[in-house]
Length: 74
Image (tube, rainbow, N blue to C red; front, top):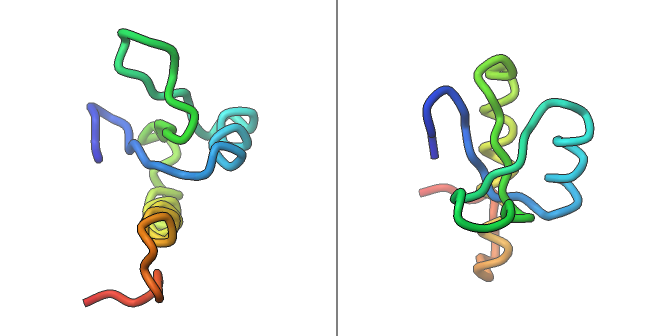
């Protein structure tokens, strides 16, 4: 999803931590509780990475949902 000038994606917690540690991403939360550990915001200053991260997120969510082939798109 897009929130303001950032892409927000759901990824494995370890990947989120990696993106935050590298400065590419930031924590995502609703403001009412601590940041969500499987969600990360990617500001438009790293917009060149949005497409790859969106694909990565799609594959992660598809695997979590039990999709037999996360790379298959209709």
